Image (cartoon, rainbow, N blue to C red; front, side, top):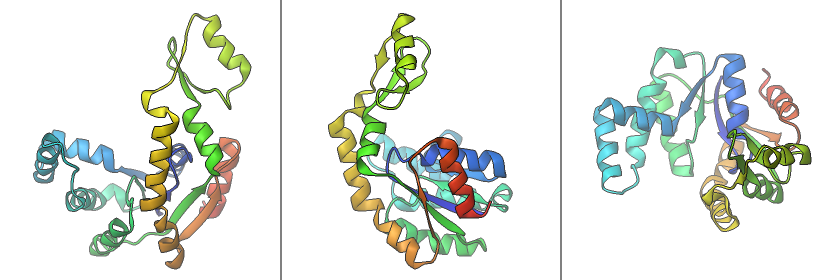
Length: 214
């Protein structure tokens, strides 16, 4: 199965995608990982990406797409893949289609993990890390017992600098402007599967499997 995951920051798409990949032997194709790998390996596209990064510029879409095309052509992707972090906008989605056609593949589904805005804000702004154990907690959703255990052990609940409300609000706005239009794009293509992304992780995963027929 060849899948694109959609969803705002904090929707849980990374958590759910990893589980689908582990339980159904589907390859994760992560834009970030591919870029880092290509740069480290010094491939032709990796060298172009490094040049852009060293100049403080964004890596262009054509370089990213080229690296993705190389990865999707590998034998382990023949049985399916999940695209992680791509496409992020309409143009990328349109550019992806001929790349897939060239390798004789097409998308089976675009999954949207649908979560209310106020819940996304709590998930993201409420994230804390235990300074002792590195355990990830949430001041809104973790139990009081879990939160108290951190301080009882002499630890602190640390908030990442970019998990503040202003930064999170900006990330969500960028998502609304650039990525949300993909929802209608894939709906019109008959590929969209909407999965309610609120509740326990296992409950969401069960909905996801049902939506994909896994």
